[in-house]
Length: 106
Image 1: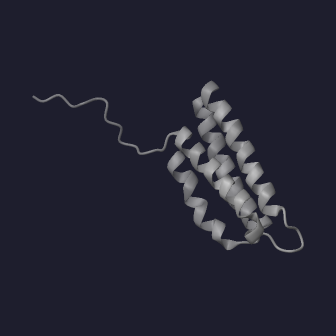
Image 2: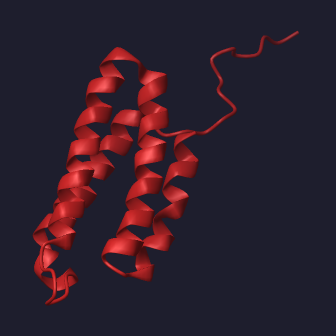
Image 3: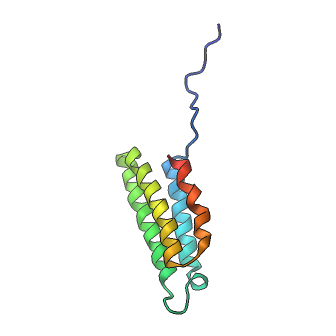
């Protein structure tokens, strides 16, 4: 009889560190394109959201060294927070397309 390889993982998930790269990249894009995304009444909304994403990525990175499972859940919560905050602050419905991002982290 053949032995089955026990290292096979049936579930697909993304490493928290790969998700952190995505958060940092997305935060930098928001900061760099803030002139085009913000309205004339408050020009720094996108910059604030980008900085908030950068800070949450830094906190998650620090948590990933200490407690990886807590870091994974923090990234999921931060991702959902980013999507809904982006929808409210920037008044853009494009952020709803990013709601599938936390599903792959669970």
